[in-house]
Length: 351
Ligand code: ATP
Ligand code: MG
Ligand code: MG
Image (cartoon, rainbow, N blue to C red; front, side, top):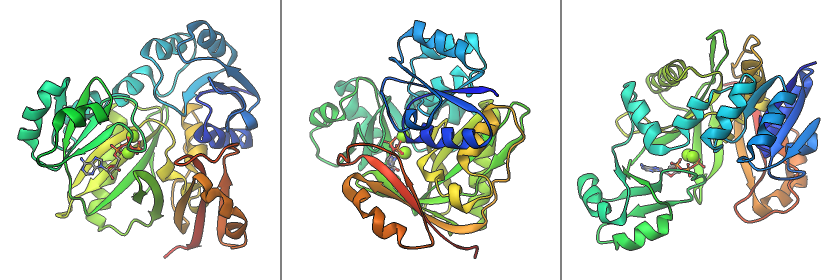
């Protein structure tokens, strides 16, 4: 059998590894963390830093294909991997999606609508950017943010030096605030033959800047879901994706679709597909990076996915007592506040 190498050791790697195992693959995880969620269910496990080029090279030699569950790998590291084995998605895809300014410019360049934005490289540049975009607006560090970390909402009259410090990064993007009707996301898969499979949009609801629920069907007009799917398909083709890409979008009150950000991997808002679709996003990830035919992404059940954050995980016995709930726990030892510990899908017959 073949071996899939996965960079990153968290829950996304765990669920990809479980899907890979069912298709007869062995999984080798590369992660700085020992015994993490992915390593627990994998065949082999390299514990090393993402900057350790020698360890990365040895890892690539030991596997048949390399993929990611975590996109913040240094460019030099991705290049080393790609020299040794097929690395999917390619280093260029990681490069674009790991920095918000680069990502927004790429999207603008292919004609995909995004929020209004300005590059801000120092506190001194912030007042002019705020003057251009107005308030409220959102200052985000250009790299490494997730779950709203490194973001500050700018309000009229705010101390901008203070906001710059709170943001905490060295290069930032200021985005015009979108008074959206709702947030949706589309997961798109593309294999080496250029075949594309799209999941229908999920409607995403956040609590304390962390995804709380994803719901399918999203309950948006057909015009909106068609626009969202066309955007995801276009991005996948133009970025030359091999693997999975999540496209987070805002739906404005007048029904326009704007892209918020991209993630070149399985995504929390696609977890509904484990129990609500013919093919889960994790199996689709494996199929795409291994060059197999893609599975049917169609929804067979109405599904609400809810995250278990921090000590919410303690409710798992009650959740299991509902026969229509499918529980997924990540095997994390410590339930720290804000930490994703698991999720559950409630399924209903398709409406
Ligand atoms: P994730 O955990 O999804 O990777 P993140 O930290 O990368 O999150 P974003 O997705 O950019 O951050 O923003 C987090 C949330 O903040 C969005 O889902 C949305 O609810 C809100 N938000 C972000 N940018 C804007 C904006 N320009 N206008 C209005 N709301 C926004
Ligand atoms: Mg993000
Ligand atoms: Mg986001």
